[in-house]
Image (tube, rainbow, N blue to C red; front, side, top):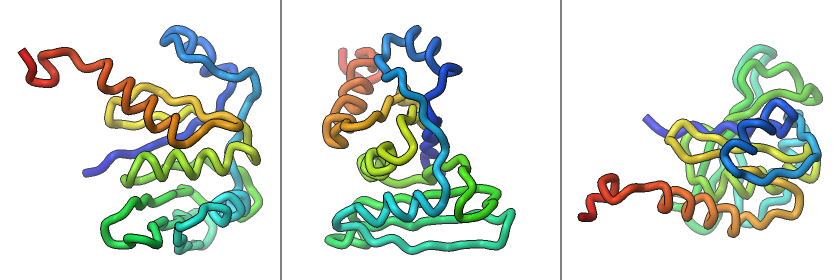
Length: 159
């Protein structure tokens, strides 16, 4: 079983929960991408190979991302569009398993097209706002730092 990462387009519906957690966010709203926009954003990632699976309508569209330097052991992720409705229809996306730093790189490449996202995972990390001009490295570091700060001594085994 692996982690599922879900980027939610930033919208007024998310503002209250982000404020309650003390998380800053831009006032700009985001939207879901189209598969064509995903292809554009993924094509801008240096050092990444992408293999696409384009199904018939209603199937699961996928982009399998691996690093060129280490395809077998390096960063990878699987980007999914469930219930594919066409290349030019905005649709919700998720990342099935993979490396969070690559997921964040993809979203940083996508944000100039769609606007900001709030990234959530089913592994318990807090939400991460990804907006225009954000540094993927800084976002990964802040998400990792947040996880370390949220652990109590009992969680880490320290006494």
